[in-house]
Length: 398
Image 1 (cartoon, rainbow, N blue to C red):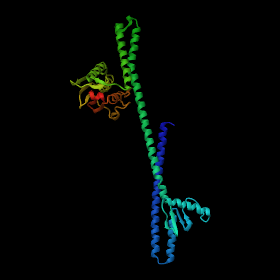
Image 2 (spheres, rainbow, N blue to C red; image 1 turned 90 degrees about the horizontal axis):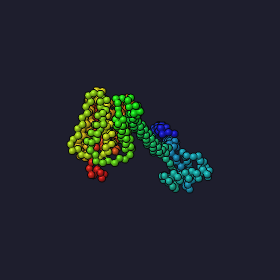
Image 3 (cartoon, rainbow, N blue to C red; image 1 turned 45 degrees about the horizontal axis):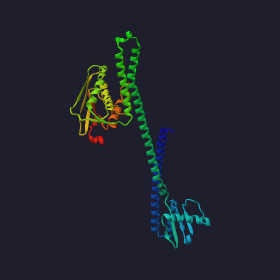
Image 4 (cartoon, rainbow, N blue to C red; image 1 turned 120 degrees about the vertical axis):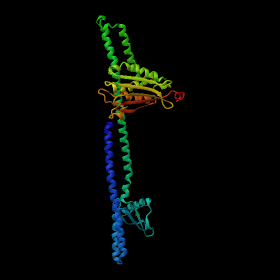
């Protein structure tokens, strides 16, 4: 049986126990109400016997009172001298007290009752041995029903949480695989194109491209492939962090994206501002560049086709931290995905896979122990903020 089927089975069992519990408690409430009515009737019979001077009427009241007690369902055993059983009512078994076997069986039952509570009466005359009323016996099941319900609730919640985590992991792996295919696809297509150009005779090559130029372009594509493989290699294992200039990372990403900006339309202005004497951060240059690249690509997509400005600012934050902000003048983040913006698959772009910001979050928060947030979003644009621990000797020892 699959985990999803187990979740359904446990949920059905929980609902069944809940329904049983509600019905059971309702029956107990009705039973206690009936017991209250019985006690009231007993009180009325006692008062009637005391008020009537006629002895025969008093005897009749006593007999009615005895019938009420017997009808309560409480196990009662009346014993006389020598442990002789004189009467027994409401026993959980049938026994003829007129026989030796019946006497012995009821006598053993009376001894078991005495272990819970002592009998009442005069030991030289008669003793009354009594057990629990039926309502009290039924109440003993309540804790077990509650424990069973809580256990099923815990197991159901555990399976649901586990299923959600596995589903999230599946989405993450699917998104990662698509992102890898996407990043590998561009340089591979370029390499195939350069191979076709290289296979042509020199006179048929477009614009008279020389083999040396083709070799340089092929080398650049190979570098891109190496960078992609290096990124995905680092994202899946423990990464060693070292002192790093955040300005170098920002400038490298700026140079890398500058070639993409003209393809997104005119009127896009990228501004970079790094405060002087910015303290180094503890990080990995490859992964931090990847995270910043994904955040900046998100900003570029926000202004693509309509123009606008993207401002990248790096400055010292609160003590021990360095802050990096990426601000755009786009239309803001769609409220539909704002609460799950950093989850895998969160995107409103056609053909998008929503993996860029989730990767950035993993790189910044899990690997670099920093923080990434959307601090502002509206019709005039959005601002993403990355906070990274500054490099100190104490942070290295930690």
